[in-house]
Image (tube, rainbow, N blue to C red):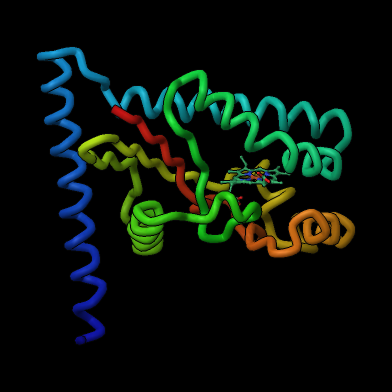
Length: 198
Ligand code: HEC
């Protein structure tokens, strides 16, 4: 295939996909007004906001109590239980997924992989990435990008630049197959995946 055409086709098919997601969102909003079904966009955003806050508050507290070494050990034990408890609270499955995962439980599955690819291409080509909603017969999936902020670099940044050798060794001892370092501020770190079952 012509190498100049390929990116164009990718961007075009992406805008079609995002366009499609938008029109389904609008269709959903109209349905909501008629029969009070869930507003997946609003609900998804709220779940993400509160799960992020729950994770971040506990992480910040652990950092204050014992510095990054203590915080990373805390994260290993607490991150999945915190997301699981939010899943129970909201009756929706909540996942944070990345191709460059630290915990193999967060490796992308099926549709997640396709959504990640679209968001990665969008990010690389400078297209603003936003959320996506995909409707299925028995469930609805809500996805949103996760971006690297300044506080994330202590554990996901560039080794020996953002953290020292001792911290790098601790990460590899806790996660021997870690793929989640080398990030810069503003990079796409992964995606949120919220699944609402019908
Ligand atoms: C104190 C260290 C630390 C900081 C700071 C930190 N993380 Fe993590 N992060 C971890 C650990 C440890 C895991 C693996 C958790 C587990 O085992 O479930 C993780 C997992 C993740 C995951 C799930 C995918 C994966 O790689 O397993 C995402 C997404 C993520 N972090 C994003 C962020 C973002 C965004 C920030 C900043 C807002 C951040 N992290 C700050 C330590 C940290």
